[in-house]
Length: 114
Length: 113
Image (cartoon, rainbow over all chains, first blue to last red; front, side):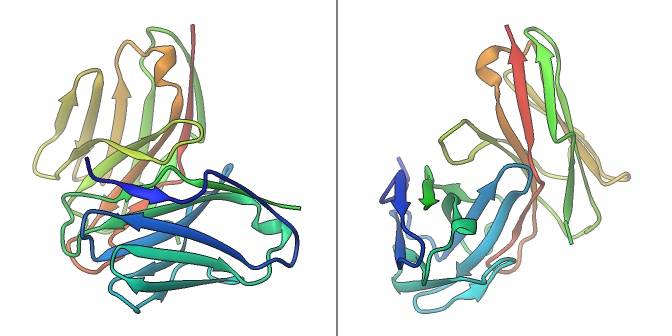
């Protein structure tokens, strides 16, 4: 069974902390994504990566950075967490050029910044 | 700019009813239209998908209707059950590029027993 695994289900962090959210996929997918999900706003793309060490900004990259040192791992970094970054964070992966397969999502990390 | 427009934002039906969620798009390059189902505390999971060369696809109680000329597609849930209560996202995909799947804003469905 293919999987996208997010390391934490729930996190509580303090304002100003540096926060790392980790995501690992075992499907040998080229592409990986980070979304945040807020009520009424749907899925908003933060960053995505199409190859190791490659990254592209999504729709809402401000306040975030990412790291992809290995194909299977994609990390989201909140440089200085703020309360408006309290949200559900979802990682996903996909194959390049495979429009018939969609994305596979992890179970999400619920982050609360206090 | 929202590439896929979804409505309604929320929907409440009685058990046994047939909720319908609608989506519309503009980009004629889209060639794959999946629906995702998300239960509380979980990530979205692929539910059912359709290609534009067919007008309808059924899987169990879930049916996608697709109108290529109107650039619209919809999800129907037959004989809805309380266990169908979830958030549903429509999406549309193109062949090229890494970031090639565009999501609607989601519909929160509640099925009342």
